[in-house]
Image (cartoon, rainbow, N blue to C red; front, side, top):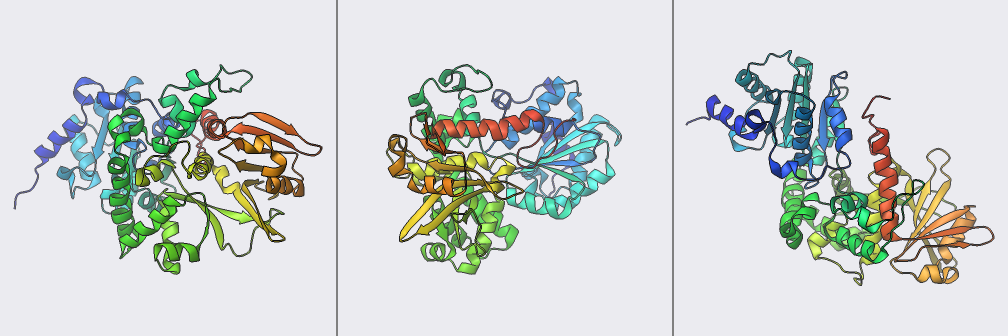
Length: 488
């Protein structure tokens, strides 16, 4: 049988690296707005003192390949020679079966590089390379002067194998879906919808327009590609849902964890997606999805590792955790996954309240503070009392914030009737203030012992994204991992 020749591989490498000839990346990538995470990623790529490979991971369709190409352009803009940068998409058929080191050697041979040269090498879709983590670790040890970056859409596989094999040699960088703040920046709506910044705060000047943008965000806003291309928005089920179902649920996770019946996993995820934001338990999930309870526990861990879902756990009226965590709230990691599976929502859709809460939780999930997030649920006589979100202090485990999420203005107009559980919880835990999300109203209710701040949920999501994500990135740390991205 015929085999691919080295000449053909070098030809493909040249094709995949057009900057070797013209000094610029593909205009498709260069014309896209940079993610808020870009500067932090670029600093990590250019960090040469620590001899580690960078592992860029995250769910599908969030812009990892685009960010890599933009990083290539940034390197060239800083004076790195064009032929000192290699990009390889490992899933390209011509590279099938090729060792990473062999591809690196062909690149160096093509341009006359030595192993001591300062080179930058990007391996994209690395999960398709068998035993990638072992090969990458060997490259880090063998070529300490070459900066190695790998990425892939099988986030669960990368996360698992990076932890297993890359201790001390890999630096993980997570790229989540867009925050609502990023979405508005991508759409160039921030300056249009907000007054200029005053004393480090901004307020919207068009709450109706902000709500319209928020509904767009719920429907397709987690994916940069959908922001730019109408065909993706119009066919979310084709471009997003099928990609996730076919490649993550039916291929990546089964191959990684040895799942014998991928359709079970698909059924469970479909049930979760439709019920995002609701409290569930294993028995209910088992009944609705027809998946065995012991199997569901494993599947939930796999779906979390793939950045598809997030869970938060219950506390009682005293903010104490339950010894047996039988109940929990479960959320899509990205609210627009629901519309990709079940169709777009509008302002009057019955699911809007749960999707708004899912969106708020997804802003928190960009930060390490997500681990402090809970919800409260307890009985008072025969009445079930609940507070949507509760934030505990990392050290004392006392309540530092309580949040009620509403997709209406009723609570702001009649807090005594609409917020009975919330008020009882805040007073029980001696909070001085608490936050309630509304549809469109701003305001403050000042009682004798409690201040309630009312803000539209769209604004609340924007603000949380700015505070928890953008400010951390500006300080030079990754908001999820805490990795230092620049020298102090």
